[in-house]
Amino acid sequence: MRVNSPDSIRFRVNSFFALTKPGIIRTLLITTVPTMFVAEKGTPSLWLIVATMVGGSLAAAGANSFNMVLDVDIDKKMNRTSNRPLVTGAITTKEATVFAFVLEVGAFIWLLGFVNLLSAFLAISATAFYVIVYTMWLKRSSTSNIVIGGAAGAVPVLIGWTAVTGTLGWAPIVLFSVIFFWTPPHFWALAINYRDDYAAAEIPMLPVVTGLKETGRQIVLYSFVLIGFSLLFFFVAGMGIYYLAAAIGLGALFLFFALKVFFDPIEKNALKLFRYSITYIFLLFSSMVLDVLL
Image (tube, rainbow, N blue to C red; front, top):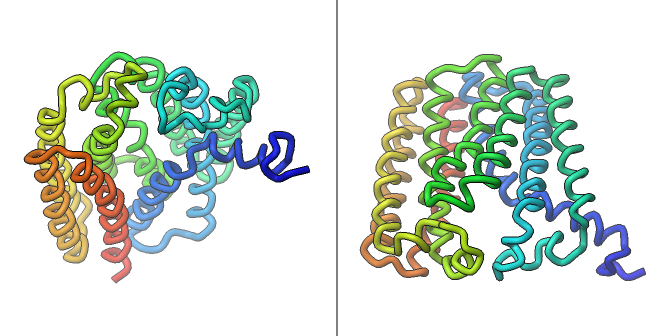
């Protein structure tokens, strides 16, 4: 039996794996683990890190799988998503739905058993918000879809914090705000490059509805707020000079790329911002770990 045959085990496993959007999960974990170091003010137990990563990954995988089930009609109209497993028929809608439910139930049970109730509740709440508020409602009806819906992607920092402390406070809320205001510039930069796809699927993404110039203006505004919250975190969480230097330097470069999009909103500049935004969030959160350990 050929590996790439729809009947092969490896093909099926790869299809279910693709359903979870592993790239997005990786980004979420980049924010979860460093947050745990800040909450601990040192190195958390290895088991707690692993347990939180496993539970968070299961919850995110389930949310992404539900998203693909609900977005299959959209994915069929977009070149970027035309090879997704539900579009190609590699997985049926029923299989994907059951898979998503199993992942979410597994995530809740795992986090409840090995982390704590608050972390488990936050994980499931993020999934519900992402699926119901963003996927089923805002994505198809409002240019604010990614602004409000992006809150789900900011919850992993809360999960990381509560996994260590069992409580919430101002520091994790400010860190939540960092991710919340990072998400729109990050996603709008990508949407500029795929605006024709979104237009074909009748999805009211900002570049499609308001045009590139207004999108560039919004990107700059959100970039300023993002930088502001990243600096506020220095004071609220009692961070040190390593984090402060990173927040200032990385933020300045983020604003530079954002301004390039504003003044010249071509796809090349938007793609540079999109790529840097991933580097930005990785380095910013890495600096937190460095700051805590040194």
